[in-house]
Image (tube, rainbow, N blue to C red):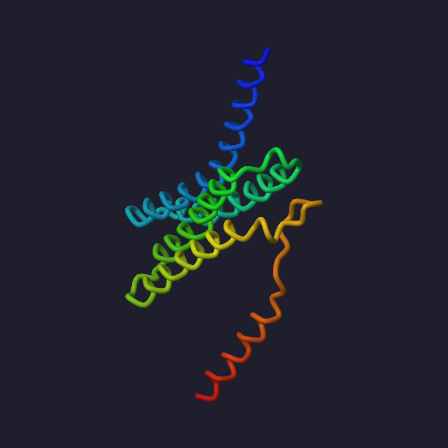
Amino acid sequence: MRASSRAFSTARVARRRRSRCRNASCGALSIFACLSYIDDARSRQIWAAFVLPVAALVLDFFDGYVARLSRRRQSLLGADLDSLADIVSFGVAPAVLGYTLGLRGLWDVLCLTYFICCGISRLARFNVTSADLTNVATGKVRTPDLGGTATTAQMADAIVREI
C-alpha cells in the first residue's frame, strides 16, 4: 500500500511538471516558428509565433491557479520550473519575434538582449523574495505599489524633455 501511494505521489508531481513544461513548450514552439519564418517567410508560421505566447499565458495562469489550491502543491522545484518556463515564453520568445519582424540593428539587438536580462533578473529576484511577499491565507503574492515607479518614469520624462 505504501509503495502504491508513493508511486501515485510521483505521478502527481510528474503531471504538475508537465503542465509547467506546456508553458515552456509554447515559448519554444514560438521561437521555432520564428526561425522557420526567417527561413521561408510563410505567414502561417509568424501567426503561430504570435499566438503561442498567448497560449503560454493561459497555461501559466491555470498552472498558478492549480498551484495555489493547496500548499502541498507548491514546491521550490515548481517555482524554479515556472520561472524558467516564463523566461522562455515571455522573455526569449518575444525577443526572437521582434528580431524576426525586423529589429536587427545593433541597438535593436542590444535592447532585445536587455529585455531578456531584465526578465531573468526580475524572476530571480521574485524567487528569492516571494516567500516574504506571499499572503499565507490565499497563496497569492502581494505586488508592491507601483506609484513610485510611475512617479520616477514621469520625472525621467520631464528631465528628457528639458534637455
